[in-house]
Image (cartoon, rainbow, N blue to C red; front, side):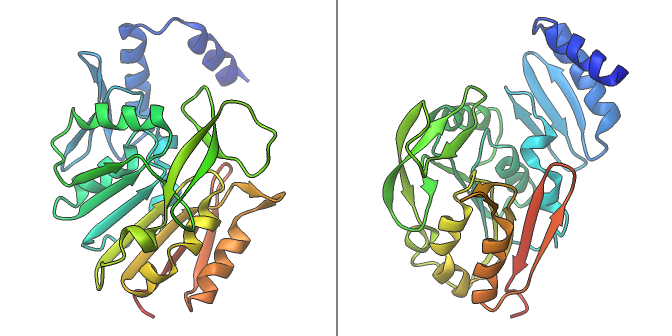
Length: 256
């Protein structure tokens, strides 16, 4: 109760540099994987091997630690970040694997601009940012834009703040790619099922580790079951992990 009250009071305080310094201090106390600092209006995440910088508050929720729960630490050739948000996951993987090409797909125009701004703070020449959503095929669809830089794929005509976005499939985008070691992360607000249906050839042509956010609802049901079925159809075993907030489904064809 006291923590909730303290959090509410802190949230009500105007956003100043001093408040950001205090926020960074509490991040350092809470998160052990890295040290957080706020310097010259820029956030810095100090990992043991590298530093990543952002203009945005680098909330660990943007990373979702479940994406790394079954992490094998393979020397990947390609990393695909589906739903890049502000770049947190993609930048981390690009820093960890400087020899890999890291493709960040982000269709929300506001998020895309934030990724490009944050990328300018970092020396990550292996990052490619695409203003595209992931889907079952190249197309144009509608998404609903939230006030917090979040977005949702629209499957029904009952939402406000709709915009048209361009989408592609990984089968189409990486049609010529063969025999690569690949990590695919997706957190695309319910579009994971469609996107995976457009990724089957790419998975079959490469060695792929997948970490898919499956805590979204499609047709009133959580997405982890249909995602598991897609992997089963590819002859791949999968495992779904839960915490109090997130659900992630893992699968790999490295041993298939």
